[in-house]
Length: 265
Image (cartoon, rainbow, N blue to C red; front, side):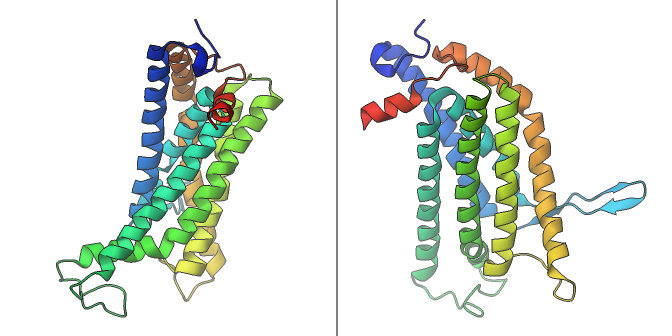
């Protein structure tokens, strides 16, 4: 087996297999990021529940649903391919989302004139109302999602490798959960505060204090991500073990992902 060896020293078949898996993981990551930015705050789900007769509010933006997949993908890439390639995927995701926003802007700027109300959306009965409503929400929250996305994903990759160095490659559960939970806290805070203060995209009650409402949105998103992150520990263990054998990479050693990038550069 050629565990841990750079691509220069493996067979073409194994090289192709490694690149194919990387492409799938990167595609899932980028697809999930694009979907969550388009869906964004277009709808809030009410997942409130009661504990001892006390209602616990849990409003959740529909765009949060695919978000945990992005962290699972970057953790797989970090573990199997190295920090450099994981960071590259994060930056490509950022550029792709800017690409999506550019076409949303272009699609709303070309003729015919849709007769926008207050420069935002046409009448709700118009054929293109749905497009302009999604465009409004996506364009309004794009700064929030981009700042939160970049900060959280880079934080996830850095913390993942910090825990890996600290534990000498052991305790996979620690770097998987530790990096994800901290980075998702960063994301939840950034996306909610920027979406409200900059984009005005949250259903906030203007007659009530703002920060208590914001903390409910922040906590709701974070609790969802926390639960999913804990649940994906077993799939991450099993997936890493299987992919390590399939790709002939030792995930417990310092693999050659970062070396490969330096050589290619």
